[in-house]
Amino acid sequence: MINAEKYKKLLVNKYTNDIRDSASIVEEDLRPPNEDEILIKNYYSGVNATDMNIMTGRSSIFPKDHIPFSLGLEVK
Image 1 (cartoon, helix red, strand yellow):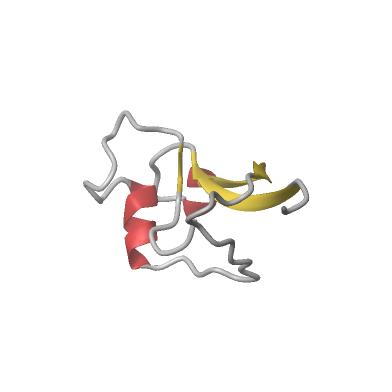
Image 2: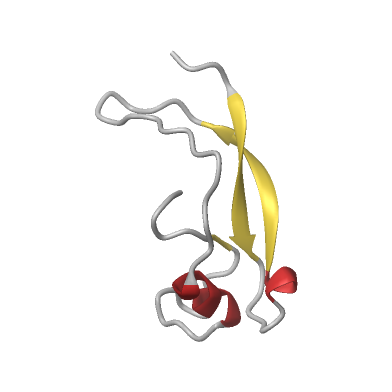
């Protein structure tokens, strides 16, 4: 069993061309993996062009009224 820990993630709060104003880094409780899951600890994660398009509202991946939401397509 994994001890209760925290992890950090990017949360998109609003759509804007000012990337630093669009998202914030938040800390959340880490839930233990289910029986059919594994936990991978990432030390770094990049922000790619798709993430940038999502943060500025130029992507249709998330509906416009779906704010706030976690950012990260490859790693969550």
